Length: 337
Image (cartoon, rainbow, N blue to C red):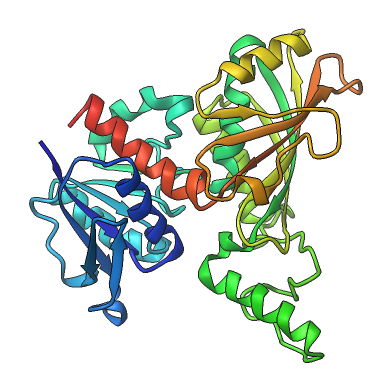
């Protein structure tokens, strides 16, 4: 038996990748619908090599009879249309930040807290976490299982695709303008991103954190453990696809480096590539197009009684968004629908 599936925000970078991922795993689809704003109606998007879909108007679409809707249209749009789809009996998997901290909405990374899916019927909505949170908690979970995590300090190196196609276009055009000795004013980012790094993602909050940093703190608590303390510095870097993170973890009890290696090697969704030599690690360039979370540079942190530090990289459009959403759909089909 197949499902009727809607992809909302199908013309965006994440929507395109959701369609790609669904096709790659041959998800059991009887009918698939591409939805976007009225400005995109009639445009064509590919469902892998299987078929070409004509985009329909989200505002006019009736979700009655639709089984699963994967949303990635922006928070304000999801706020209006995700509840509408859920009330029609469609299970919504939402990629925006709008529902993530709602206590009645499960926030899911399948390798970490698949069991939390059981609460999805309360709202018929499941939230996909922030891209930078997803890759970090996938790497933290196997370590937390063998030695309880007390505190995490993380600095992120986030690609411009986290700001959508417009962010990618701005990096491309600004880079080109440098070589053409032209000046191009920033529109997507607060300052030029080409040949630069920006310690500012999303809006600033009263305590000095940005909203992106706030997401990493509170989403980690909701997904993994409310007792874990997190401090984050989120930085935009001139990379098209793939987020990197330098993660320092303090544990409440001893953890042996060999134990950590073994746990990460066996963990679902993790690829440990850690040779102590030039090129013996993963960079965003190698991670692009892959669904895994890659861990490198694993070593002891001697500044705390029980600590480790490591480098983690993942494709933010795939595991950080589209692939995680598709994994949730897979889990739903296997366990609940």
